[in-house]
Length: 239
Image (spheres, one colour):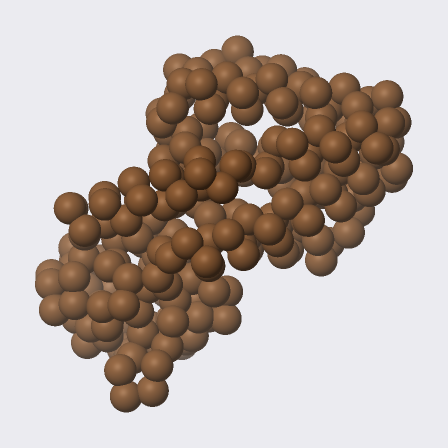
């Protein structure tokens, strides 16, 4: 866990030239986004910009560009005179996020059923068939990535780029909780089975069935979600 004022692992030291500045911003963005997604920063604790800039070997200008981008994406907060900090992992925020995800996923299933070609559907079926064979033996990190890939590929079949973009943002913000859920063997088995039901309904061009299967898949019961949140908070503050 990276605390305010703590040391950050050293990145490449350099003062980037103008030609390198774009690649430096991309590198910083990828690393800081991953850290924010997995709560390497404790919620509410101000990030030490001087230390972060030094660790990445850049000035505060490209760092600020990345931090502001992560604020816009909902992964960080910014408070004037207090600075940047990681988003809180509170129950209301998570419930709101999962409600949005449920709506996006249901629309994704509906549009994919109506718009995707048979070949596109077959390709997604083959992808998930191969994933299922190894899903229960993967690490939680790989399981989460595989699950996110499935849902984002399905969103691509909706032929709505805005829907895909919004789902990718929600997936990034819910990534930490997904990781925790994927540690549970029953959750993995249910994920495999429920994805199969969704794909079967889409292949059958059963719009109502696809939407209902997706809704059942992404709608965690309130008590389940509360337990995952509690576990996530405990891990953040025990690290």
